[in-house]
Image 1 (cartoon, rainbow, N blue to C red):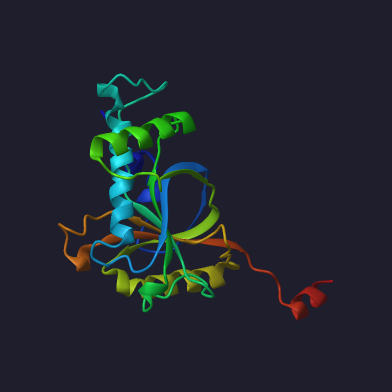
Image 2: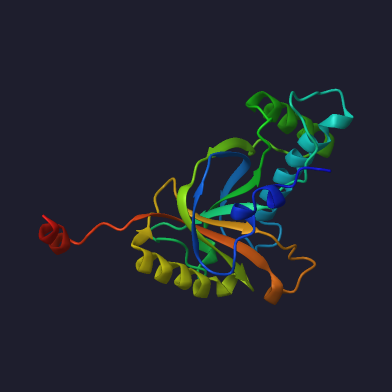
Length: 221
């Protein structure tokens, strides 16, 4: 049976519809960076997703060709993911999609080396007649995060984020957005086949222990 990341790592791919704190270990990804509205027809985001899947399936189907990857095992291509941010905004503002910066992602099995990745990018470009040069091998270590399963359209995400923020405050944590720690989404539904009100999306935010206010710190000493 093919290895399925969603089933093997349920704590990261199948959270509950209520906030929870997790520590996410380092993982390797196929990544394509871009900016702008992801809903733009034939825009940069949709082209990026096409590149991701071209490279991902070249790696998955390598077992059928001459390129042998050491340690290869059959697996299900993991769900599409994305890191999102906007200049001057903590988290994201869904009302201004044109201001988005994003890194679109597909997780790689651990057996894929950077050398194997380079082979896959070159092979995908040749076979698909597609410029895959934007694809990069990216290691991400998220560390401590809060996450929730959001059910519904993307534009309704602020309600789920509000639940996460309230939970953090109650537990003594706060968001920890930075250049390397971003709003993270994992898309569990095929938007082409599922009604928007049933879309399932993992929302994940980086966090840290809340720093005491100045007065609290002085009182503690």
